[in-house]
Image (cartoon, rainbow, N blue to C red):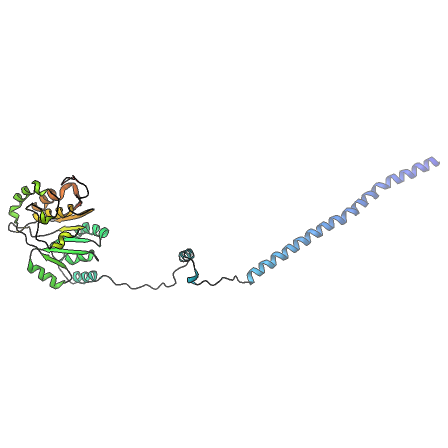
Length: 318
């Protein structure tokens, strides 16, 4: 009986001990988990408050920008400021056009006389002037288009050579700002074939100052100053050449080519108008050279002639 009682008691104790130990573990773990949750929650709440306060302060507190005077800026700072900031004054400024252009606008607007060249022909010379002007521009001929050439070569020097004194007086009375000189020609269109043969001689192939040339075609009656200028453009649109007794442009074309070859360095653009006529056609090909021909538009030809003084032994025509 004592043995059975002992066994019963021990069994009773063994059966009750596991639940007691499990409950004890649960009670001991529950406070720990609760503490962790509370700590995490408190941390998140604190983080939320910090972020909220920083966001509010960034909105309420204005950003202070130091005032900088332009005089205190360095060069690099000024460049950066000018690149990023629009100009302070957007009011358009008024600038005057050149007097020659103003005069040309009024002249051609109030005149029913048009220049002798067509729009496309003028455009050939205009393209060169746009690149070279202001420059030295020598024009054989004084006419209704003279003011236009002077205006297109604004701030450059444009000189006109004319055979008719009365015509010079008439034009310069209307446009006194033009620089023109009277030139005497001692040739006639009827002599063109003979002069072309003369131009093929060796003395006419020598490059030099036209005043000292032994070639009969060289013009020697210009003012001294005109021989000493290096001309960037030369336009041959005179003298008269449409009838047999007219001077013709034989000497003018030859002399233009000689002046271009005799410059110190660089090149000269030479234009010949009325190349539909025999004299202008033959003499421009012979003395300005087909190898130097750059363009032909309508009745005008454009030649680019390099200096023959910068390279010895250069042939008269390429």
